[in-house]
Image (cartoon, rainbow, N blue to C red):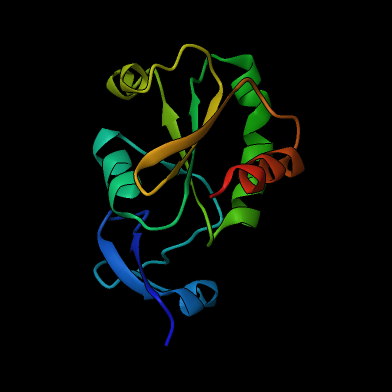
Length: 146
């Protein structure tokens, strides 16, 4: 029998119970019936962030960014490619620090872009500055997972 995991829906933010063995079989949300994994970063506000990081049982990779930031815009395509490679084992999200200033302050974000990896509701790794490729992002996540 496989382990059950709590997976938060990227669309309605409902927490779903999914067997670990079923993650790769494109599970749907029990509430809104949309896919639990889209292969693309999910834009989150503070409430959505708290649900995904606090209730989800897979690691969450966060890109703290802003639309005016050149390095953020340069890294965005690589971050999207990394999302397609990391899901369903890692939830990949973006937080616009201009719109979510409380989150930026709460996590003491001093430069953007900043990548942060959360597991079990706790930040386990942080990297300020842009990474150049999807391979670099995936390697960074894999080297920091616990």
